[in-house]
Length: 273
Image 1 (spheres, one colour):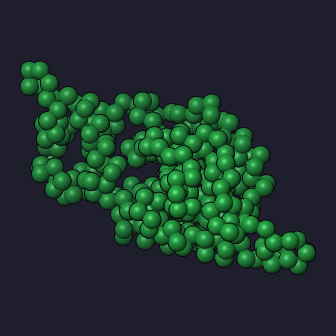
Image 2: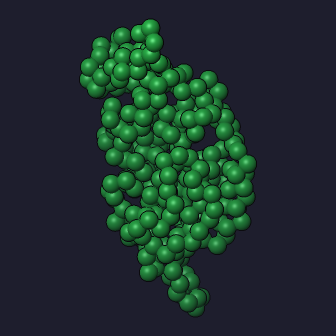
Image 3: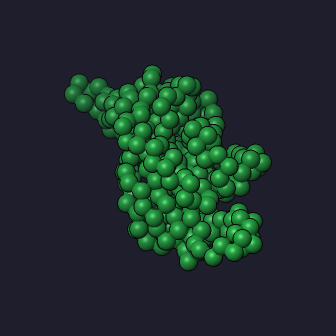
């Protein structure tokens, strides 16, 4: 299954980021704790250059806790990192303090040069549907940024005061032009970073079933009360009442339900990298 998605607004988002990166002090990169590697745009390393960075692993409430801890230790060798949940508020209060710590050395240099103190300028970057708008709403204490449950809702750039000392620039989500590793494309698709309309949902759900049977078999079987060795879309459909004329199973509807239950964390908390 090929998953390729790089619509025109992605090109514009990349161009806009290149234009505005020079105006910010710190870049907050938002990743998915379920995909600590696959959810990070490889183009960002080149685009961001030597900018100060903070890596936030969002959706930690949906990720495997043990593996999240392991990834935080590994990623922390490269960049300051924190696991959060923009949905539940977990870890949100630590962000401003971390930004202040990251920025402290630069502030001291500016003070030596006699530059008047101003609010820290922060840019949030990440792939589509990663939770950037929800994060901003958590930081501001209200629905300041437009949110949605589909990739690509945020299309324009906007500055938002999230703290007396911090101004934040929200940016549209940006995928990369081509998934060289098909596995990365599938992982991004099952977690919702790629629009459902651009891939075969039945094929993707079948792939996810095989992945879960390999890595989380007990949790999968327990949730659906099915023997793992016989677990497939047909059985999911029967469990969820996706029956059409002649007693056949509507496997497309079953796939949609299965993907929705997986993404919401109902089946189990997973880390796919």
